Amino acid sequence: MPPKAKVVPKASNPEPKVPESTPETLSDRTSQRFHQTNPIEKRLEEVGFSGLSTVERKAYIYTRLIQPVADHKIPLSNKVEREYWKQVTKDGLPIRRLRQGYCWGRDRTGHDIGAYQLENFAQRSVKQAQLIALDIHHRQFDSKRRNAMASGIDVSNEEAKEETIRRKDMAILKKDLYGEITGSLSDNPDWDDVLPIPHSEPDDALSKIAYPDDYAEAVSYLRAVMAAEECSSRCLRLTEHVITMNPAHYTVWLYRFKIVQTLNLPVLEEIEWLNQVALANLKNYQIWHHRQLLLDHYLPSIAEDDEAIKSLRRTEILFINSMLEEDTKNYHVWSFRQYLVTKLGMWNLTELAATQSLIEDDVRNNSAWAHRFFLVFSDPSVATPDLPATAQDPKVPGSIIDREIDFAKEKIALAPQNQSSWNYFRGVLAKGGRDLSDALEFSEQFISNLGGDNEDVKSSHALDLLADGYRQVGDISKAKLCLQRLWEKWDPVREGYWKFRASEIGD
Image (cartoon, rainbow, N blue to C red):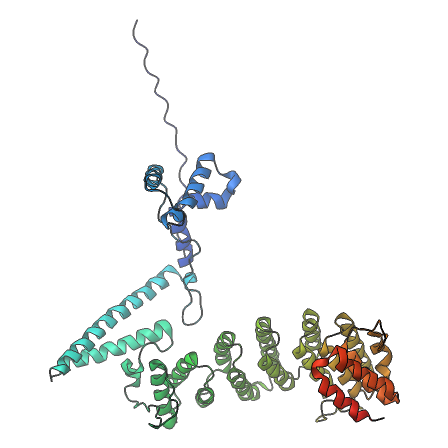
């Protein structure tokens, strides 16, 4: 009987692989390469951990464990480590992995480099490579010239000409790639015609300032172009260079505005650049003065264009709000906001609602309270101009006074010991010509058994107001008792002040 033929299993047709799409941007290519080297990660994103097969889960977990072992964060004995790496090699697990979500940074215009089309990125890479190659030749030339000078000779004219061309090419590439000044100004051919003016101090100066070399060089060139009253694009770049190193240099800001004004540069582009500087230097004052000068210069040119003014108002407030998100009590930002309200006529409910929102977020935000007071009682449509801040203003409608009194009372009830709301309350009463005696009943609710055994004071500021209110109605004994309890118990830190106030009342 002939032997049975072996049954050969039919070859299964593997599912055709779906070709990967061609990446369009640099970030797309980075993501694609990451998934090519980490296929389990892609499966995880598609189906989640529960959707992985047992083999895939095992591979995923092992892959996550490799890096800590490779970085020696998990110590293993020599024997265990040998066996571990044998298993890793056997399973073909990736030891080196590309980083997920790699950030390529931003270019000189602030655009995300990861969003570059691949062709554009290739062009940028070529320029960077050219700059590196030119820099290598430049350094070789410098070294050769130093050695030659040490021997009492110099390089040939041909080599010097090649270096001049090379430096010009480097300057063009740096400007194109990075926009800002990089490296030493003395190496930049754009500045060959400028003789820097170094900072000089007397030999017997008590304390000489040790400026960093790059800053001292930049400022020496700044002095030279300022002395020559030059206003050019290279000077504008120089001011940016100095501001990057020292944003508090007020002279360079004034010079920068002069350049913008003289060259009639686009103000909105300057403001866009200024926004980035401001966000990086929250407490800098010069930024806001520069911004104010820019708007004073720009507004006359759009005075007849309502849409342009509306757009400016909207973008300025959006930026101010972004600054206040970083620091809600930034004095310089609030000061500029007052300027903006006056300059752009922003005496409106939107601005009033903004103060209310900020106060509700933080009832102790004294800056928001101060801005609200300015907004309500400096509005030229309902207020007398140029009156002292707390002087009575008969022009302000009683309905506004009542509204603001109710607003202050509501916030005082939320935080009785908050001085901001009490100061606002007093200010509104003064503006409306209301006596403090009108506030006695409201203030007394925060005090009980004054001077007694079970004395309870929820607000020392209420005691302060009551002292003035009782004095106003002629109840001297109660006024003095309020002040006495302040220095004895509720605010002893200012004992001298309260005693002085009591001495002013008399008998």
